[in-house]
Length: 392
Image 1 (tube, rainbow, N blue to C red):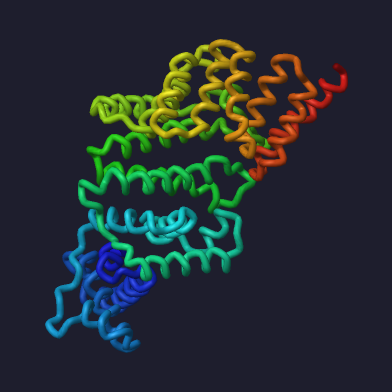
Image 2: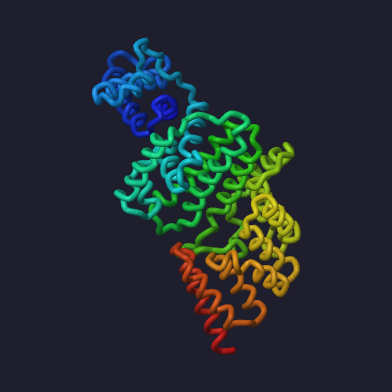
């Protein structure tokens, strides 16, 4: 319903206000007159009329009034749940908007989170998030961002930012441990719901299916991601008996169907990597050679040095630490400011017996890490590394 109103009004704030007015009107009328045959359409129509009334009272620019309410009144926007939701998602994730604004708008307009909930999830003051949303809405108006599903020829370019937003929202909740706010942990749930909804609305898009599979496989390991004290547990150390095997099998089956469309993309590749991890009986029995090849394919698709860093981890497992360290060192210029570059390098140096260098690399990783759970893990490892270096 927000999507139907936003699509016509071109303003998320007005669409939200109009919908709230319509809901209030429904609470007044429906107990006496009964629920209409098409309640959603009734709410959209009522909200549309309320929005036009407000625009008239405010006497906002003649041109806008003429457009929205010409002398011959237009029919209210029609309501189509799936199409309107898609239009809303693509509008919120429009390339004209900066990435933080896309994320905040999607959570507010599509997921229905309050400003307070979004602020708590991203650990920023509510007024800061409110201003971020205000600026994003202003950009929508100033740049005439359309709330519509892209035409087929635009879809390839427009789908990427939508999938990125959903993936980033999931990642924010993925590393939230039991001591985090409920809103922050709920981000993973919101992202899973968004990915599933988008997959239902766009069932023939393999990258949408790939993202849905990737998130489902990550979530299947949720129960083992933190220990009872809230400390982060790395994949290689997780208790695999706690993984949701039914969810893993369902995701792998879906991945087979997605890959059968033979329209490869980075989210499908990432999902294939996650599937190899999820179906391995142990870290040692993982097909690291295949994972390395998939990460190299991911680099070919994305040009991201992070894919090469992950490929080097697979090299470590499949070939050895010496070769892997050489590969990691080739990435120094591009990843020196990235925490996992230094954390990976520390692991390799320690395996090669270079304890002092390993401790130094881990200190760099810790200095670049903001997530509390990751900081605890790195601090504990640094204590061990420093002790080993002192003994050596």
